[in-house]
Image 1 (cartoon, rainbow, N blue to C red):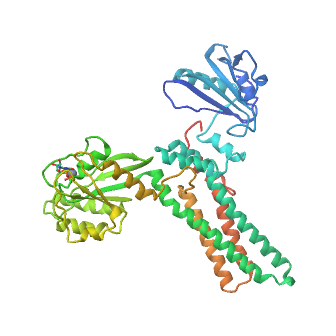
Image 2 (spheres, rainbow, N blue to C red):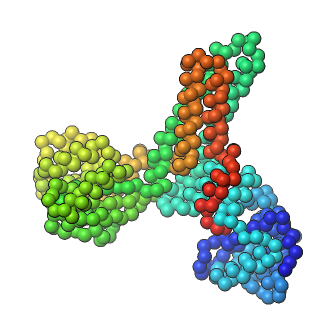
Amino acid sequence: GMATVAEDVIAAVGTAPGEAGIAVIRVSGPGCVQVVEQIFRGRQSLKDAPSHRMVYGAVVDPDTAEVLDEVLVVRMQAPRSYTGEDVVEIHTHGGSAVVGRVLNAVVRAGARPAEPGEFTKRAFLNGRLDLSQAEAVIDLIRSKTDAARRLALEQLKGGLSARVKQMREILLDVMAQIEVTIDYPEHDVEDVTIEQIREAVDQVREQIDELLASSRVGRLVREGVRTAIVGRPNVGKSSLLNALAGRERAIVTAIPGTTRDVVDEWIHVRGVAFQILDTAGIRTTEDEVERIGVDRSLKWVEEADLVLCVLDGSSPLEKEDLELLERIKDRPFLLVVNKIDLPQRLTGDGRLEELPQHRIVRVSARTGDGVQELADRMARVVLGGEGVSASSCMVTNMRHMALLKEAREDLDAAERAVSEGWTVDVAAVDLRAAWEHLGDILGERAGEELLNRIFSQFCLGK
Ligand code: GDP
Ligand code: ZN
């Protein structure tokens, strides 16, 4: 083989496997230009080509000089690259035989195959991204809806990092103030400092609470909203599911209790994914099979992020409807009055009037009337008023949530220390712990183990 010119040059295919117009092989690390130079025959040598400019040429086998493909190659000079190192990208034709041969040639010329996520890991180690941004790269790639994409991109751009840095700044200021107090006790500044500690603790706690509150919505946007459709048999649950999904799927029948198992359907509303579960008709029954379905529906009511409770507008409220209303009233729910195409006979001795009216939506699953309005309401119940705006910063990552909670506990401890009359150096220990926990979101102290755990979730070539 060839002499190894590179210190630690990694290479991987950055595009998805299979046939495609093009594929991109990414090569990164000091010396990667020399590695690729050995197998590239172009009008211009790579090292003389301007950075960030495509160069046309061919890739050849390093031993036989056989032409493997016609390619476009671009060199990105450090630090202006994804990894912060010198990077070369080879754009080949997108076929598996082509890609396999070209990657093999790159490796024989001195690169080694990259591990999953290794490019992003290098970007982190080189300070191009902090850890929360690197984590956002995975989220961005995995996002299935537009809202999830927006949240991930906001985090990648450093939205969360900026908030975290701001909180750490506040803590650092007060920690410095405490140092002064400890170093110059004769100045008797203790009282001033205690006030400052309280203020800093309050400020940061407020921001943490705000971020933690956002995490509920953040998780729903990222993972989807589990939505249960409940109601007694024949009110039109399956028909409603079909109307929301815009196609036939659930079994619709005129015999009560036919939907025995759960049917689910994913729908996207305003960029948010709803996983809608059509549950068996909830009612008391002697039939064993149906009863199992009913038990499960009640469990779903407890576990769902959103409950759609369906009533039949063409008939009066029944005892079963009232029981159901009782069960869902403390859950996030919408009351769907179905069959508005029929003469309306829905009465319930004022029970409906007691409910918050903005929770009631009138629809006809048969004609489609009101179904769009229902979908909009569903999005609003989950997201709150304005939805997910481009600038919203939401915590979606469990690791970040756990660290925010730990930092919050440290701050509680710091406040207790000053309230109980301890000297300020006691509070200083807790403030530092909070500062460090927040720093862990950015990966300030991240060890090899944590980094491996995070980056191993990446796909190859990212
Ligand atoms: P489920 O048991 O609650 O799932 O109810 P289905 O969706 O199976 O519907 C029961 C019956 O009500 C079927 O005959 C449907 O065609 C009918 N139905 C459902 N929605 C409507 C509606 O909006 N208007 C009318 N007129 N009939 C409906
Ligand atoms: Zn049904």
